[in-house]
Length: 246
Image (tube, rainbow, N blue to C red; front, side):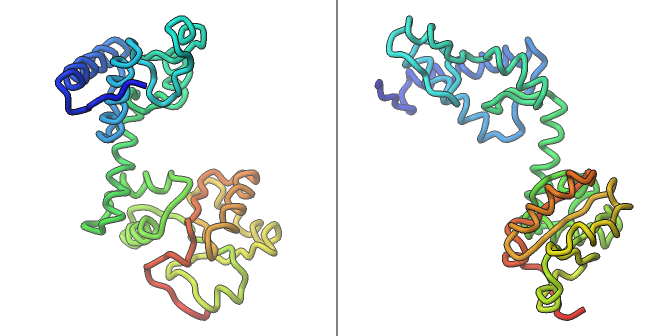
């Protein structure tokens, strides 16, 4: 396999051509680049590398099959922009498999999510209403994100139900300040009926390590709860305020 020196003039020239190619694809199909610059840079470098090695911009997220050009063509390797991305991935998911080509709608939504996560993790400032709502649309949350959301809820920017799915004894020993309901996993199907009025509003579930709550999350979705987030890895890694007792 040919070794590529990314600092060489040859590679840098090909990388510049690749960025021009990316711009051309965006213009032709109405795409935009991923709001995450690291994704774009990694994919562009992979495309440039494959162009120098194979003579074609094979998708860098897949192995190139075949030693000769004939074998590579017969193997139907993905050449950027590939047919699966144009016909299925981007229309359905908003971005291609590698992530460099996105719809404007996906890029805008993802940028809000990225900004919300950055704020939640740095605690440099409070979440905006849009950022808080974006976090509530995520399937998995970490402790920093939950802490930021609880602050946003206290400011009445968003509303959600925080649900502990551990057992009563565990809840008494320690629970997250701001918990609204206790639905023990051992009594799940009986207790969840008490919250049937919340099927269309956001709910965040948590347990000790995130395992039981992950199972509850999927069970709730099967029962028609539309917006269920799971705290991973649970209260064990939560650094916000907790309390004991009732």
